[in-house]
Length: 336
Image (cartoon, rainbow, N blue to C red; front, side, top):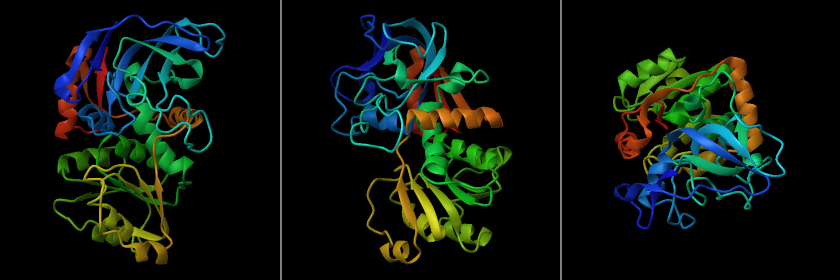
């Protein structure tokens, strides 16, 4: 089978299309013919070799993908041949809270990922694809969508009376926007692009802020909601966390998801976190059952992923370069 693999040395220039032996099934496993994949910022970091010590070469990158079952091994009963499925981000995280035994054992990191023609996975490490979604749309769900869902509904309890600030217009951000609006919440979204902000309004954003025009964007949040936001989807990291804290209401919640502006900061206003009773929650994707709850919610509200651009399987390096450019609005996908 064909697969994209980093054989020895990390770096996008070392990501090559290779021929690998066809995988074999063990009891409890299914063979999935992959039809689509999607890229996340995390995949850029992984390919660059900067994701951590658990990631070794050779490696097939990417956590997100979709396909259909072509063979079922012994002792399997969840899926039939032909069923459309998504492998989950953490193959060992079935249910409940995060535990040391399931993190950081992730696809495209500790385990080989989705950029290959065939995958052998445990039948318990897949979820069925809702009929109303295409394979390409489903391929965008395992990391970005589940992360946004976990932030809003698994690790907090978003209500229709809440107001939410979302940073940026990448995959997690737009899923958070779609989920929050489906729940009836008000949403303010930030970006450096007026064009992207206009598109966010078309998806339901109530308020928008261009952080180039308003670098102290927390002030714009307070103009809309004088007491601050109930919930902030924090995707920036070092250069945005302080503003998020100052833009959050007393008793509010910050979902710390991304580190797009850097991983370290020395300007966290600790007294404000304490005195305002703010909860900061790290979010790393979610369990299989969280994924299933999310797809049920999506189907109920007919939520469609926002796909920016799709590349052919042979164009994977170009897809990575496009994601790295930051031009995208929503998901960057690969069609096999």
